[in-house]
Length: 441
Image (cartoon, rainbow, N blue to C red; front, side, top):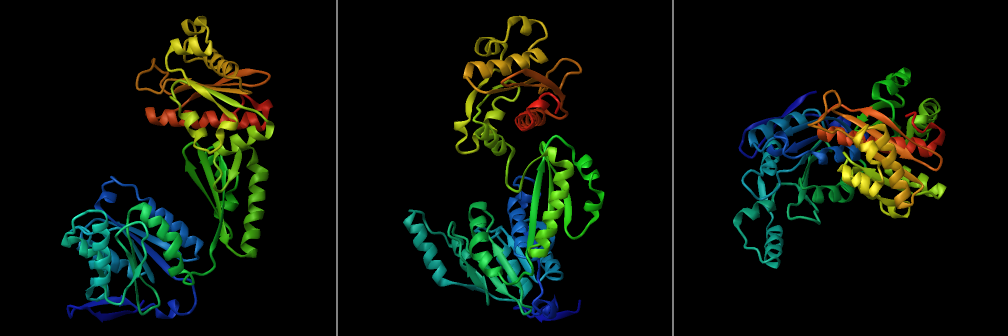
């Protein structure tokens, strides 16, 4: 790629790649994301913004092959911007647009583009009026949010004081700067940013995500080696907590959608017993829908998960029509008094046993008047009898029988608890889907 020297405001020169032919040919442009903030590098903040932007770029048909994260340091940010400009027509920065001394993004962009910084007095007046309306004193640092590289245009932010901005470049692309707070960033993506970048992409990407439980990532992928190596469509597995997702992607046109449909049919035919849903469906949503369809209800009895199952189910609006409630039976006394677990069980096999899990599930079902009772009891750690750390029993009581299954989960306390919740929901889904399979998950 030929590089062309370009004068800066200081009279020095920067090298800019010549990408005009591709950018002006009507082909899809390439974008690169640069996330700005030392807190991202230190792990104090998880960068969910870049993930959301990556999804949107695919939907808009804009190629996205590289992503960088850089701290609040102008020199390193300039280096990152130069690298991004060498391989993408559109460079998008996230963060660093606030009023403080470590908010340096706008000044680094002005430097690499060789543009002088211009203060927009109309924006200053709007900011001053905003601070007056809130009864907050104005300090001159706030005026930095009105600084714009020459030739740039503002991108509206309806939820904050830091406007975004777009600086077009000669190759038909440009540099887009967006604020970092998610409550400001995400609405901008689906509003002015979408309008700004529309027309700069090629054929958008069509994606279908199948969601699986009760099967590991490697085992699922091994069933479809040819699909994993294919290119039209692409198929890729992703391990999630308690689940595996298979993403099928192709061009968002009639031919691409048909290829995705055919591959989905093939996958479902071979591994459908583990596939509970697709795209944005969640396991709790599917479980609640199955209960509604059958006119059934659910109660839970939780020990080591401490209410985690109930929390997952009640995240879904309207869950109360089929989820009647639960008992967090963290002590043996509560297990006996509120779930009817016999003292002979608690004094014999113990609170972490097949017998206790079955009694808990049956107790939840009977005492709360539900069609199904689901229970969890186990050793999440760190304290546990030797060799039993991570041992969890999941019980299920239905209209015709009650039984429990033992699981051994690895990991720290939080991980064991999360896996127990996921497995309990998986066991329930399998029983609702095929009642004869109870206990054979």
